[in-house]
Image (cartoon, rainbow, N blue to C red; front, side):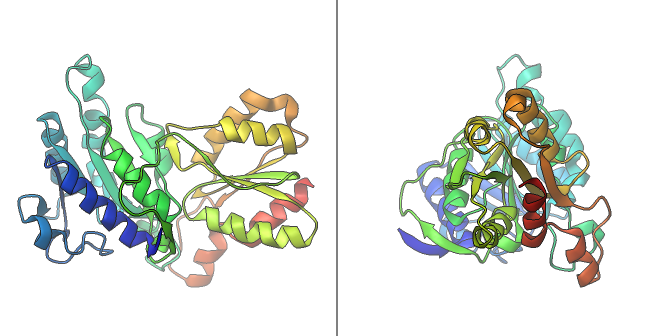
Length: 323
């Protein structure tokens, strides 16, 4: 194990996969000379050259379309979008082309495209640059969606993403790039579609992913001081979605709180809640609680921004309402 940052874990995964498969290349705005907007691709241009680390014009539609075409042609492209907010400019390529080509061609065409992008709020970047849009992609059949929280998962999930044959949206919360943790060195894969039990407990089940996992961990410590024992499950991927550990946990605790940074209405947590009700309704002792971003554009003002976002204190209050 090495203690490295989330950013370094992603960079390590990219280098290892570039070495393993010469079909892999990356393209995007400032991924080469500048090393990426958040320095995830730092050093790749010098190591692998401009053929495999390609700076592009400022056109998300063109970048993503080129990625779809390259994937259909037998390469394994990575498209880096400077933020997921700019994916809205490429939704036709993502939803109508990347997600549907394999189906429309009867499985004779594959689109092994990985679209990496930072997302999330908390940095006073305004309403247009502070969104968490995972629910948009979860809603579209044909797209895989990964939302790693820890540096180890960032490395392991990215490596797995680059070895499968479906288009995959890989979402990295902007607040996580500097977070450090133990990351296995060398070959290390985290399978897509496998939730992770991070904390065992008996009183309530916390279910989360990405940055909100850390909000849940902080809340669990506070609740422990109140005599409330929280179990925490990190979903890690939303498609494939692994509800097995969630179902088993709720059978034990009888209570569930979903915590996510997307908007509350229509968010990924709403889909997970619906599936929980379908699977284990008779085991629930109380209605599922959801802690999510307020249904409003994210304000630039720091106090208003943080007031709209999920927090450990809000998770604590949700659990207290249940137990």
